[in-house]
Amino acid sequence: MAGRTRAGVIIAGIALMICGLVPWLARLPGFSKLIWLMIPATVIVFVDGFARWVGREYESAMAIEIVLQAGLPILFLMALRKAEASRSWVRLATILAAMTFLGHALYAVGFHTVPLEFKLMTRGLLGVSENGAIIFMAVVGWLDIVAAVRGFFKVARIPSLLYMVAWGGLTALARVASHFDTTSDSLGRDPWLVETLVRTPHWLIPLLLLALIQRWGLPREGAISES
Image (tube, rainbow, N blue to C red; front, side, top):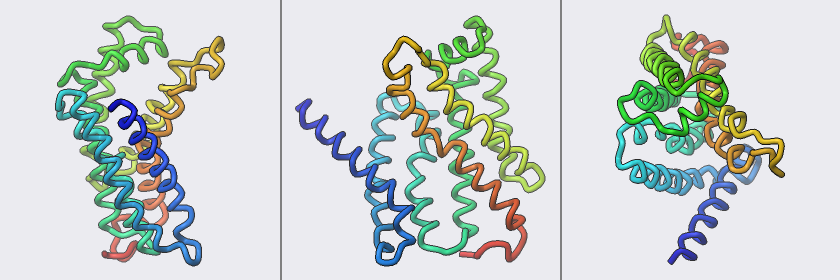
């Protein structure tokens, strides 16, 4: 049974790596049909996210924070089907990014038990006590909530997205930085480099939204396609 489970995980991993090439290949002549591989990719990522949610004993924060990762293949599919960004894409990307930060915030402010991993990373990188780490995360958690909510309002959208880019990038890099070990053959990068890559959407999608705003002046009428 364990062998079958491992084989299934390996197959799913290989399938996701293949799907990861689709955005690069789908624009080439003769490869446009590859975009539909985003559908099985969505299923695989959703199943993985569901398993993590169950592993966290159905905590609401876990269900909320993984939606951006789970929804990323859908964003790719929507983007690859059109030559320009659509309002629907921008709305969905904004919602998914906001939910990810809200999910993180629920842990950080103590709505659920603050994960030991969060506390250890904060203490290791900032050199603070456990109490100091909890206070720091609570402050950041409330900032996450503010950024997630204000991101839906035109006047505050750019500062909110800038915050998401900065903090999303820092928290992703924290996985590698907090486990850096010069005595290890991999310098502590295994498996933390992968954990960092998995969290790339947390800062990359807000950065893309920011780029769209700067380029087309969203949500100005006519800046993007309507569908």
